[in-house]
Length: 120
Length: 120
DNA sequence: GAAAGTAGTTTCCTTTTGGATACTATGTAT
DNA sequence: ATACATAGTATCCAAAAGGAAACTACTTTC
Image (cartoon, rainbow over all chains, first blue to last red; front, side, top):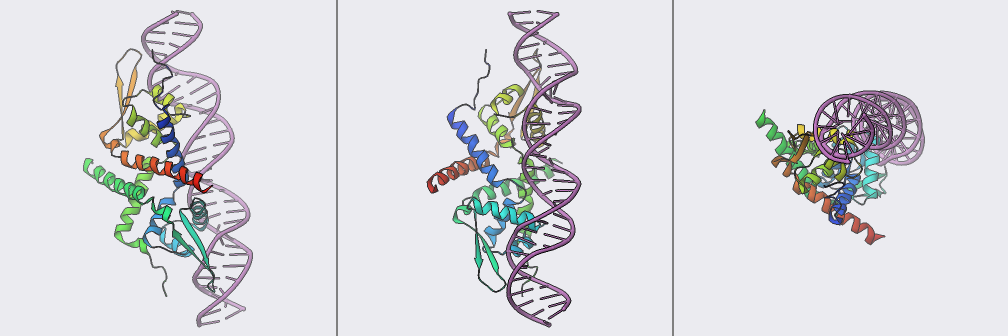
């Protein structure tokens, strides 16, 4: 009777799915949330600061992820004309709109860890 | 003056970062949110239903992602003893706790798309 | 008995992602 | 002049992720 029928064919679902894809493509990767989370704590950090703060990341990935975040206006990059030229990375106002999602994810992860300990 | 100092070294931050890693490792991949989102809409779907609903996914990925989600108790898999043996996939109560995160992500993605159109 | 529907698995291949290492370029302190 | 700090880039490589197509196995319908 039913064949090729689709729930997700409604315009609302299509938009939703597209939105999730958009968000994920911007936020995907191993380090984005860590970098954003760190910048939300200590605003205005230099490249080397971030390299120390984000545990395990290397220069190549940090550089690449920061560039991605900057392109998407989630992080700002300001070159200071100090003598040993420094760069200040900071989260933008727009980047801050991700705070609820990052918090939600962190809290969910904490709850998940607890639930595993309980069921074991 | 300051060297090797770390903001992220506080126990609270460590736990938070770990939690984000946990959550991401469970939810990473191209299809998890789409599958979960679909199952949140139409509860109880068969393998072939999902294959039709989740646009673009193939059998290999669907099978693998469903297995991952089942292992992490986000999705239940029930074999029905109907004549052409069918399987019912459904989101678990635990899986439903992800609804706010998925909604948050979808809404953020929608807002992001709008903001791009405005700035262009 | 051939086709089509159920639910997958297997194999092979390409792309993407990420890491280690070395290097550039500039400036400061010793 | 040597060592260390700034901020990266470039290169090479390994591993992970993902896709296409073919195949298994069982049942029902035409």
